Image 1 (cartoon, rainbow over the protein chains, first blue to last red):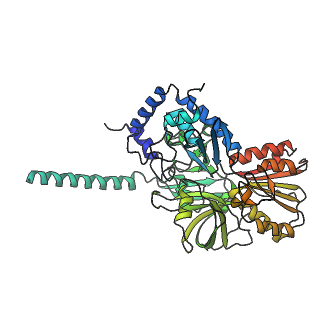
Image 2: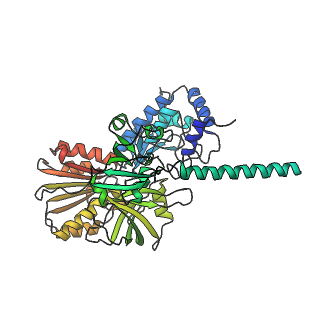
Image 3: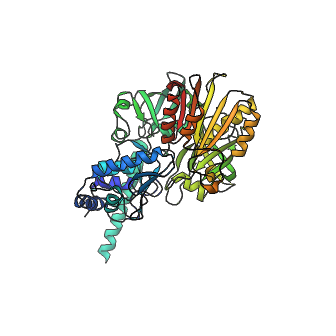
Length: 155
Length: 368
């Protein structure tokens, strides 16, 4: 099935070298729509929402950023580390403004899993339900992310 | 077989004719003839050939508007106020301008084509901006993830700037990067060294320019940059006490400023707080301590927020903002200068404000 023109334009902006060195999709060879549909189903199946995930990511981001490069505890068995980077990056969908560069590394001690995300990555989850291509640096696998963030609410 | 060959030839010929028509159309229909661009109400007037984006047109006239993406419409840095002749906003601009900007005649200069006479407003400092070619004279590792570039300017072969300003370094097309991009870096060398530009660059994960600097760029390579830009600089008050706060590559403008102070005999009371996580993240410590011994009222306070036993660190410990809080009793007569990440700046502004430094006396160069 052909990709819609709107998604094709977004996918073009997600290619390596356009907005950042590695882009947002590679090495995932699936079409953007397929990635969005698959991850949306996963999030629904986990009993949560893109917005709930994004809100929790934002809270972790804010705590890590305040640590100024020092590991901070962000929940039971979870720590985060902020790494600064210069400049801002626009959203590949366009029309959403620009976002500060820099990344947070979130570690779940119970599972040993480590996830990385950025301010733009949070926006992509919240506004577009986009968790980035499998294998990319900032891929947020919904199931691993939900475990790392304790979503749905634990207890 | 003959039919297939004939069809192929007809298709190829048709494609060729269409391509020729497109080229002809580009040269005729897209040629808007001579246009006049009035800059800053008569400060400069340009006679240009219409048809190209405003950013590129200005660049051809040696007027450089900051742009990180080289005119691809992704960075939103190249905004210019167009007070006449701009016409309606185009769809690609709408995604890059907020409501306030749209109401204030702000345009994205890489998207707006010059089709008729224009009147624009740009900061006066942009008239001093030049495009330079240079040669990398030295690449020095300052830490595990920070390098210093020393660039000898070739054409033009000198630069004039105010310490605290920045340049844009061009990362050429390479590997995964199909087109050149520009990234801003504070000038770390003192203005007295007019034939060189030193930059302090930290590796950013997935960064287009920093990956090029760290993995491809070599001593002897030619580079392109433009500048100087920016308003981050010391105030004119020679008696006002200064508090400087920086982390990582935020050192760059202060390294330029403090060497300028030494050369010019500027004797302003100043405490420079430099924060890092571990010992391996510190650099230029010996040089700054030497400068502190030469400038009677300059104090250098490096601090580590994550010092380990192995670091053998006997200096200040804690987040840099905590160290400032301990050292600065009363900031009522001081002014603050900050350079670093958004997180550090936000935290530092709060601390300085709590110490009594009014907002208008806190100056910062925020990376983000």
